[in-house]
Image 1 (tube, rainbow, N blue to C red):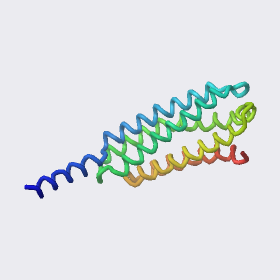
Image 2 (image 1 turned 90 degrees about the vertical axis):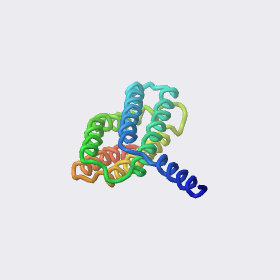
Image 3 (image 1 turned 180 degrees about the vertical axis):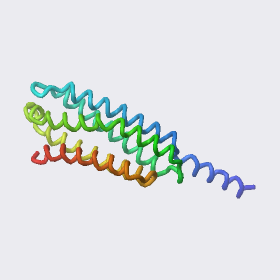
Length: 176
């Protein structure tokens, strides 16, 4: 009887630690929400005359997006394999819909480098650089986890385009 109870407990514990398709769909939606919040905060920061509060809001929103990406990595990595081609296509379509926002977010953060440098407190461009590095690293890890779950040429091309945009933004902040 004890052995059966222990086995049931372990099976329940193992199952509760696994994610699945609904969790990944939720993660992508949460990533999209956090991305939109970050994008909005970057657009609200003017190219001249921004405030420290606005800059810190951008940083906080970048950290929140990183948290969502990291949760997505965990959920993708703990999803039982295999999953259906339809689910993979759904993930890809959802991520492709985010690509224009990702691109513009990275372009706009690059466009605001001088405004960050002009703020009276030092170190903000270095903080933006750190946020960019963290987000690009997490984005690459999330994309690679999804590619392991759902390999396709189209998904690889999407990952490569997003990483190219990340690297372009990183290059703008390379000297800080």
